[in-house]
Amino acid sequence: MMTLFRRAVLPLGLAAALSVLPGSVLPGSAMAGQRSYAATHGAAPFVTQHLIPGSDLDLAQVDLTLPGAKVVALTIDDGPDANDPHILDILRAHGAKATFFYIGAKIPEHHGIARLVAASGNEVGSHTQTHPMTTDLNPAGREWNLAQAEKALASIGVKATWFRPPYGDVDDALAALARHHGMATVQWTADSQDWKDTGPDIIRHRIVERLVPGAVVLMHSTKAATVAALPAILEEGEKRGLRFVTMSEWDAAMRQSVTPELALLHPAPRRR
Image 1 (spheres, rainbow, N blue to C red):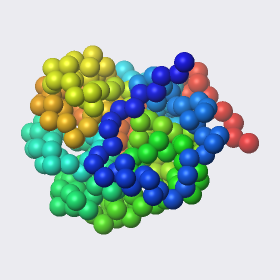
Image 2 (image 1 turned 30 degrees about the vertical axis):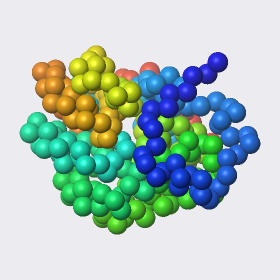
Image 3 (image 1 turned 90 degrees about the vertical axis):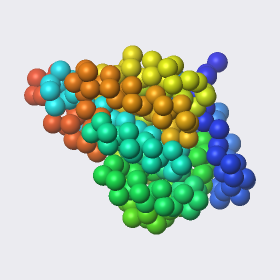
Image 4 (image 1 turned 90 degrees about the horizontal axis):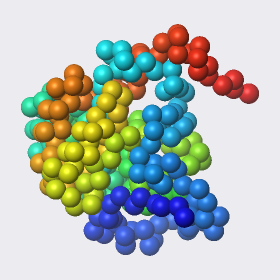
């Protein structure tokens, strides 16, 4: 039996929004088929099709032993949230950066905080409008969720270039739709599982044991324990010589760490 990792309870009010979402659940949707690797296993391996589906970057060609590859993408989902300014303070104190994946429907309520984050030098990406199991929606419902989130992000001066599918639930068609909206899709390699309402020490342990060059860390700003755990996580990364960066900085670092030797060993498939 396939296990589905549902990683967060919908924020208050979003469940009601789903009931009026344009586009009903498809009878032949992913609900009855195969979920993505991250959705079924809790995290993605460092493999293009699972971690950054649809990307032209072949992660098999990346030499993670190079100094330039010693970066970790810190991603923080489910905001904007009242905890975000505290997270910004922690990041600033450690010279770290992050990508905040925002739910469009939450932006009006936390507009000032969202604008603060957008202007902070960190990155803001799309986490859809209402946080649904997006592959269970028909094409109209998928388009509505991405387009409405795009409008909400525009209200804080953001044109997102990264998309984080809720619950890690993505298929080829959704990744293609995200690209149509100018966004690359990203999952994660290290899950804090802070959505389980665990304590800071457990959250720290889960991340630290997966803190390696090229990692993509998933956390949620809606949890106080996440804020409490973050300084120790950043300190451990610093001890290991790792830099915490945005998704765009991570992508650039990975591309700069592609080597001719690994490219020969793992040639890109020919496009027809």
